[in-house]
Image (cartoon, rainbow, N blue to C red):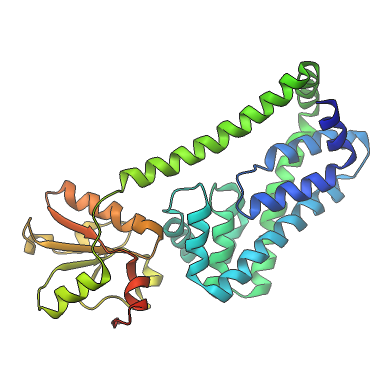
Length: 308
C-alpha cells in the first residue's frame, strides 16, 4: 500500500490521465476516486490545480474524440459496438439518442455525470453530424465541470481523504485487498445489471426473411417502429406504425385481435427497446408478439425497401 501511495504522489498526473482516458473509452474503471485523491494531494505541491485539471480534461477530450470520429465514419455500428462491450444495459443507445436528439451538443455539458452516457454521447455526436467545433467546445466544458468538481471535493475534504489513506496505509496489504474488492464489487454489480436486463427481455424473435415472407403473402401483421423520432424520419419498414417513448396509445390496438401477429422493431443491440415494448403488449394480452431480429439495420442490409 505504501508503494501505491508513493506512485500516486510521484506519478499522479500520469495515473490521472490514464484512468480518465480508459474510463472515457468505456472501461469499467471509475476515475472519480483517482481525481478526488489527486485533489486531496494538491497540498503536497507535486502539481498545481490547473495542471491537474488540464490533464484530466485532455485525457477526456482525446478519448471522446476517438469515439466522435468513429461515430462520424462508421455511424450507428459504433453505437451498437459500444453497447455490446459496455456493462451498461443495451437500452443506452435509445436513452442517449433521446437525450442527444432533444438537447444536441449542449447535452455534453452533463454527459459525464450520467452513467453510461459519456462514450455513447460522443459517438452519437459524430453519427448525427455535429460540427467538430461544437463538439470540442461543449465536451471540453463538460469535462472541466466533471473533473473540476472531483478535484474540488478532494481539496475540500483533504483531511478526511488523508485519514482514509492513513487507515488503508495502516492496513497494509489488507488495504490493497479492500480497494481491489471494492473495484471487483463495482464491476460485478454493473455486469449483473446487464445480465438481468438481457434476461428480462429474452423472448422469441422473427427473422427479416420471415417478416418479408409475411408481407409477400399479403398477410398484414401489425408492425411497430419504436425508434426515437429522429431515426423514424429517415425511413421505416413499409406499413409500420410509429410510437415514441413506449406510448402504445399512438397505435390502434383495438383493431388488432389478441391472437394477431405483432412485430416490433428498433435499431438497438439485442433488440432491447423492441423487446421492452413487446413485453408491454404481451401484458395487455397479445399472444403473438415478436421483436424483429437485427431490427431495421438487418432489414436494410437484406436489401428490402423502406418508406419515408
